Amino acid sequence: MTPARPDWLQEGHDPDYRFSLANERTFLAWIRTSLAMTAAAVAVVQLIPAFRIEGARTVLGALLAASGLGTAVLSYTRWAGNERAMRTDAQLPHTRGLVVLSATLTVLGGAVLLLALFASK
Image (tube, rainbow, N blue to C red; front, side):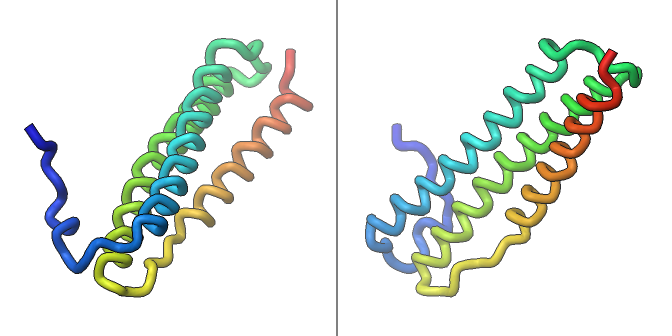
């Protein structure tokens, strides 16, 4: 049985396979980032010693896990939008996802740094 394909894959024409493969490599890079954030969430909650601030590890782990989930969702929507644009000869869509991801990781990195410097037991 052939898996169901989204309707938009029937639109337009098949793009040059090199562009589709490049789009897929970008998607996979985003998925690796998502998996890394999820693994970091597990590591923070399970492996890092407790901080002086009660619940800091849990909050940090939850934020990392939510970021990983958001990145996974964003990776698919970005891949699909690019693929659709290539099929219909439209301009590639702009996403604010990169700014959101960068800002989120900057804030989380700063929080980890502050917790490591000032809240270690």
